[in-house]
Image (cartoon, rainbow, N blue to C red; front, side, top):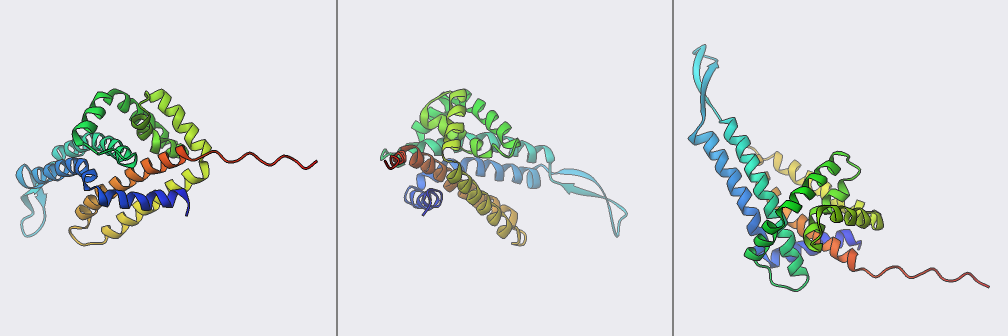
Length: 231
């Protein structure tokens, strides 16, 4: 079994044995759903519609400001939650107890560095070819305790040193994400909402997998030197 598939399978085991890992992911999910309720039910916008039998009539549409505002706030909280999950997974893998308050305090104390790392990761993602670097950048920043610049160098070194395994890991994560989105997209009415919930939970497993993958390859012994040429 490759390190990629092993890390993902182990991450499922780690996540199911430590349900506390899913708690941070609930915060952005609740915020997102709350803003959708506000946009669709509590504060919809009244506007003019055209149809039959009345040519002109009043209709209610979801409030776009609340929808986009909810996405924005949930994204910020989701970023913090993802960083907390990295720290908690790192503790669990290294046989230390996971602690929500400890992880939150650590993330908030290093938020400036993490934001810079997230910006660098976003720029790397735009180039497509540097997506593997972007995937591990924030995790390395948290695990190694380095600043964004040093973490970027470490991420490049890690990806270059383990290029084959990293590419396989990224492909598996992307394919599984697409499959989940495709499957739940066909469920009538609740498909999109159920898909969002499942995706949030699956992202926890993928985050744990990235931590496990990084720590496994980082701690792997170097390959033995080639044998000397025959005399």
